[in-house]
Image (tube, rainbow over all chains, first blue to last red; front, side):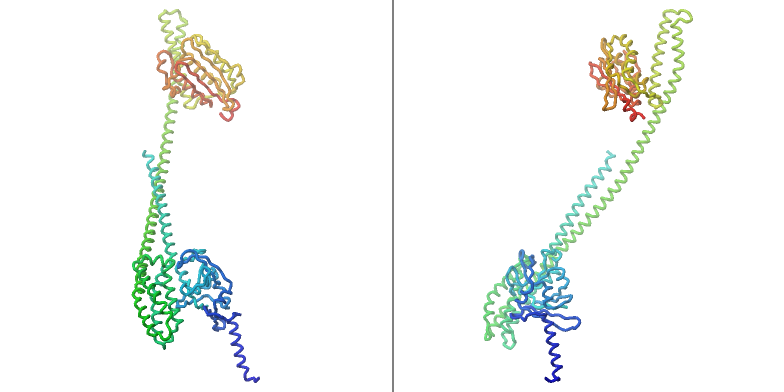
Amino acid sequence: MSWKFLPVFVVALIAISTHVDAGQNLAEPTGPIILVVDGNISHTNTAKSSRFDMAMLKKILSHTIKTETPWTDGMQTFEGPLLSDVLKSAGLTGVTIKAVAINDYAVKIPVSDTEKYPVILAHTLNGKVMPIREKGPLWVIYPWTDNPELRKETIYAKSIWQVKKLSIQ
Amino acid sequence: MTFNNPRMAIWLFLMTTVVLFILLVTTVNLTRQENERLSLQARDNIMWGAAQIETDLQNLTTSLFRYGHSSSGVTKEDLQLRLDLLWSRLNVFRSGEAAQTIMVINDAPNMLDDIVVTLSKLESEILTLNDTDQARAIGLAEDLLALNPQAYGIGIEVFHFLNNETVRSRESLQAGMSHSIQYLIGILVCSLIIGVLWIFETRRANNYSRARDEALAEVQLASQAKSYFLASMSHELRTPLNAIIGFSEVMMGNVFGPIGVKYMDYAKDINQSGQHLLLLINEILDLSKIESRTIDLNFETVQLSQCINDCMTIIRPQAEKEGIIFTGDCLHNSTVEVHADPTRLRQVMINILSNAIKYNKPGGSVEIWCEENHQAGMGRIHIKDTGLGIPEEYKGIIFSPFSRDPRTTREKEGTGIGLSIASLLMESMNGEIGFKSMIGEGTTFWIDIPLVDNSAAACC
């Protein structure tokens, strides 16, 4: 092997290591991608992104919230990973999560919200997967019934449905 | 009544304050509930949702138009997504608060139904479009365009409704706040008035109390002055009386030679009148001394039975003269010892015994006995007669000076101050005097005197 290929080899190595870092041991999605999580690492400013299919999201420890919402009738049981766990699994940290919906509606969720309350990225409502027509496939849910102080317009606005992307800033 | 008025006013204002406070709490509570109700509703979501129906309808329409032009790159999947998104918008108004709210907004439910019905009809056609159906896609897009007025209308209706609701809520909250402030001012004013009335009332009560004390002091001063006057006058009166009684006795004794029968009668009259006057003056002197608290009492241990026997010896001749049966029984109580001035105690007993005999009926009886009440710490002497009895209307005043039963005033001599003296003397000796009487059956007086054991606490 000629030494002239060394720089190419080094660049390829860096590229592979960056990719591994970004993936943080995440398996490659096999089904349709329903969520993209991206963000920046402050010290390198290198862009990273992780893609999830439903199977991958379901592998993250699931959390259940029983709550009433302004958009449903009666008590509902939501199930899905904690938003904070989704960030961890993507190997990302930050102070704000910009959540974007399928129709490009976007809101900013402070990471502190996810530390203070068990905010979940629900993929299941009352045991059923949610289709787009029923605000699926992913819906950010706060535990309103257990925390009356969350029952206000500013929090309701953060409960974004049809989530397709999370950008950590 | 005037004394009660400020207190009634205080009560009235206090009640008003309580009522205002209850109103304040109720209003604050209702306002808080209204505020909570508003915060529980995601009204902005409804406005947003209504606007999104229009947007997503237009997005689907545009996608269909573009699908109709094969070069646009819009796929069947894109159409499916646009359709799903539009349905998700419509579904927002089929559950939760949005469903409840839209039901009461004029034409909005009808317009929503129009869109749902039309979309349901067109849905299968949209989903079965294929690459060669450009003309059909454009036709479907035209059909959807016809739904624009409804989609726009829902937005307008929701906007007006929420506007009205916002104004109504704000006015309701403002009214609640305004009422609360009014009640609060009312409470403050009432509290202020209560405070002022309270200070006023306290001052007035103090003034009243001071005036009463001053009046009482004046009365006591006047009473003392009267007693001093009587004491000194009595002394001045006794001096000439000594001459009258002494010289009348000289005349009655024929010391300077015999006098005629007529003069002897006159001399006896002078002597008797003098004696009566002396008795009267002595009693007035006693009364005034006791009232002015200048009487000297010599307390010592007195054998009650001995004291009673002494009195019986003194009184027996009077009883025999009046034909009254006089008995006494103190032998078995000979050990009762009381703490008193023996002379003054005898005076009290003789006074009552004398009355018992004087106001008895012919052939009646007088009985005297004593007993001991260890629990009360008192020795008690009973003097029972079989006289006329004391009428009900005199029972309250017989210990007052110069009060006499009018039935006997003319027949019997007396000053009407004997019982007053007895009562005041007993009071001075820390004892008490009282009676039970029944008209026609007689009267039983009782005299309580502190026992020796009890006297230390009682008199010193």
